Length: 335
Ligand SMILES: Nc1ncnc2c1ncn2[C@@H]1O[C@H](COP(=O)(O)OP(=O)(O)OP(=O)(O)O)[C@@H](O)[C@H]1O
Image (cartoon, rainbow, N blue to C red; front, side, top):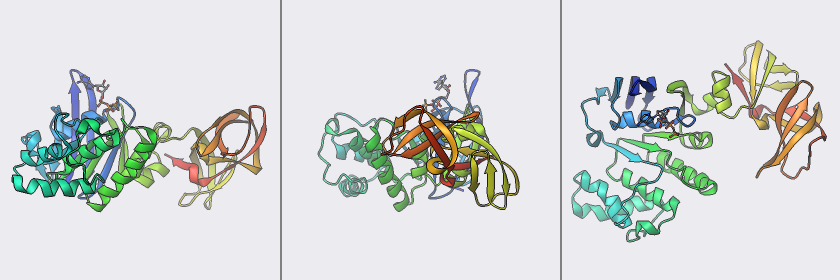
């Protein structure tokens, strides 16, 4: 295992911002720490880098405890929300800074800077002033600077959250590609589930200082451990049902889900887990909001109020009758 974190606790005064955290990151793997604001993500990341003193527990690399290793000797690369570039230096000098710090001979800088700019999609930007870069370009330079000394672990703290939505999505895709291509071992901190699921192989969900669930991206998404984690992962409606040979019967219809034992099951529905359809359970629209890719509805079905979606071009308003059918794609199994 490359990085191993065991029983890590970090206090601010008497307040434990991180409690008994356990994490493993294998070589070449990307782990996302996902959690709401204030859950302790940045504290945990800072403790791993050595920037935050730990109260108890350990951080090790390849089995060696890092307690006595200062921040700059851990060989970790860091990227923060606002890249924190040096405003008075050009792009090349910003990237070369990391090389100088690590004693790379000056004559090798130019070639390495060129290579890194190519890697982050900014070829030819060497002489640009960093104050003239867009937010997305600045984050690419910050990434290049962090990668310059070939860190053994890249730590990214909300690297995309300062950018607007469209750009964030594109940069997340580019970054995912770069991390995989270069087989970079990385820890990403984010409050954005989509970002975590785009970028990471595995995800650890943090809440109130505790890691609530940890596992492969797909398995956490499809099988959150409890209602709270499910809610944080976009589930808005819970539905109890009974599974028999891969078919779950609920009061909102039947749904086929693989790999379930027969018996009671709790389903967690994301809005697209219920779709407007010609047949299905009848309900009445109580609210409708247009989104980019679909029409999002709140529907009253008997005693329950549920979220559902209709195609983007549909025109439903409060009071309209609809029929809903479950879609396995938007349904998780909780617990
Ligand atoms: N220097 C500090 N002194 C005291 N309390 C702190 C300090 N830094 C953070 N905290 C508290 O510790 C908790 C965890 O903070 P942290 O910044 O790690 O959370 P986070 O999940 O990264 O949040 P965000 O997504 O908003 O950055 C919060 O309750 C915060 O108020």
